[in-house]
Image (tube, rainbow, N blue to C red; front, side, top):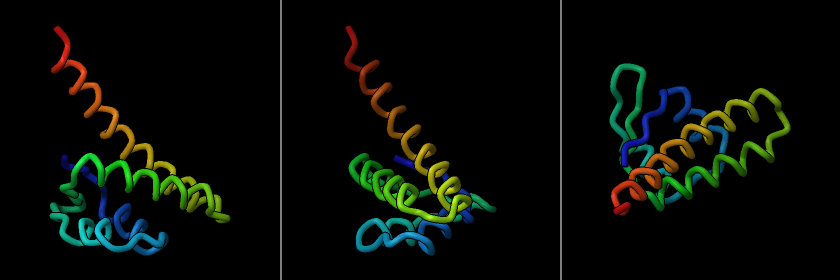
Length: 93
């Protein structure tokens, strides 16, 4: 799967959350195109990243940070839900 985020969004995830390990490596390995970042990941990585960003957003005391992280989580969940829609269409008879 390819998640497209802005550089600012990736920087926010890296700088303001306690993401580590495999998810951090995936973000660092992402390709940068102009101001966009294309993150290649599996569906499982996408789900974990969404949960992590959602958790950080709900724990944030700064309302602006909370809004920005929540918006990123929505983008990630939208891509995730699109996968499930495509999978269900592919299995429909």
